[in-house]
Image 1 (spheres, rainbow, N blue to C red):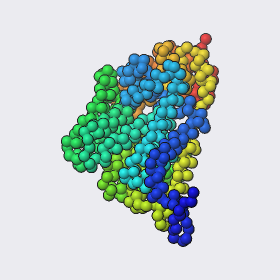
Image 2: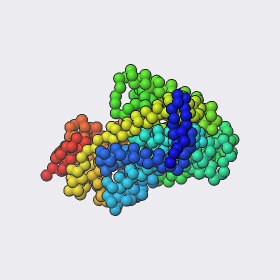
Image 3: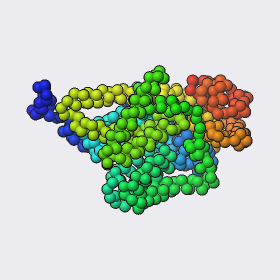
Image 4: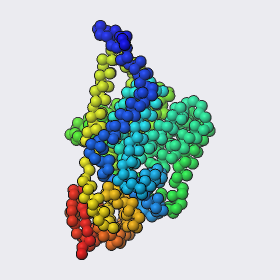
Length: 522
C-alpha cells in the first residue's frame, strides 16, 4: 500500500498519516481511547508488579480505609465505635472488596481493590481525552497521554486513595453539564450534582468544586439551574453523611473537623511555594533549595499564564476556575503529599492543553512541527521514566509477618496496613481481637495536631492510654511499626504508659526494619 506524502518546507516528505490534524482526529476515536487507557493502566500497575507491592504494604492510608470498611461489614460503625478521619463514603465503596476477604483473605482482597483503583485512574485519563475533544481536539490525545504517564496522578492511583474517585466524579459531572453554558436536561443536571455530592462524601476536597460549579451556574444559567444542581449535590451528600452522623451522635463532625479541617502546621510561605515545583520535578530526587524555589516560581508563573490564556475560551472557563481553586487549595493546605495535586491534575492537563490550542491550534503544520512535536515527545519520555522509576516505596518482607500472625490467635497491630499485609485483619475482627483502625485518627482524637486546650487533651490522652493498655492485655502477640527502640515505639503513638506495658508484658523476637514482632513473656 502506497501512502501519499506531504511536502514540507525544505523539501522533506512526511507520510500523510503523520500529519498532525489527521492523526489527531484518527487517534481521538476508540483506538486512541483504548491506547490511553492501556498506557495509564500499565504505568500504574508496572511498578507494583516490579517491586511486589501489589500484595504488600504501600504506606499508611490504604490500611485504615480497608480496615474501616471491614469493621463496618461486621456491624462496627466509624466515628461511634472507632476513630476515623475520613468521610464515610469511602467505607461504603470499599465494602465489596473487604467482603471478598472472607473468601480470599486480606492480601488478595487488597490486591483486587488496588487493581480496581488502577483501572479507575486509567479511566480518568480517558475522561481527560473526552473533555479535550471539546476544548482542544487536536491536543486531546497528547493531553490524555500526558495525564496517563504523569507521576503525580499515577502515584495516587496505585492503591486505595480518594483522589481518583473524586477526579472521576468531577470529570463525569462536567461532561453531563456540557460546560454549563448551554441548556441542560433536568435529569443530567440532577445526576451531575449527585455525582459531586457523593464525591464529597468520599473526600472533603471535593467541597470547593461543588461551590465553584454552583457559583458558575448561578452566573451563566441563573439561580434556578444553580439551585437545582446544588440541591441534588446536597441530597446525595446528605444521604451518605446523615445516617452515620446520627448513629455516631455528633462524633462524625468532631472527628472530621479534627482529622481534616482543624489541623495546624508550621509551614512557611517558602514551603507553600515549593510545592509547585513538584508539578515538573523528577520524583524522588531532592534539589537544592535555591533551585527548587526558582523552579517552583517558574511553574507558578506558567500556571497563572495557563489560567489567563485558557480563560478566553468561554467553554473552558469552568475548568479554569476549578484548576485555580484546586491549585490554591494545594498551596494553602497545612501538609503536602502527592495526592494534593492528583485531584487537581485533570483540570491542570485540560486547561494547559486548551491554552496550547489557543497558541498553536495546529501543532503539526508548518514550523511548529519542528518545535512543538519534538518537545512533546521529550516530555512524554521524561514523564514515562519518572512515572515508573522510584515512585513505589520499597516494601518490607512480609513473609515473616504472615507466618508470625498465623501462629498466634490474637495479634495486636499498631498499623492496619501491617494487619492486612499479614493476612490477619479479617480474622482479627472475627476473633474479636482489638485493632486500632487508624492511628492518625487516634492522634487527632487526642488533639495532638490541633489547638484544643490542655485539659481536654490530657483527658483524652488518659482515655486512649487506658484503652490501649486494655487492648494489649487481650493480645498474645504484638506487631509494631519500626524497630524496637524507645523512639520508634513512641512514634507508634503508644505513649509512655502503653510503651511501658509492651516492654513489661512482651519481648521482641524479631525486627525487620519496617516492623517488630513481640510475643508475651512466659
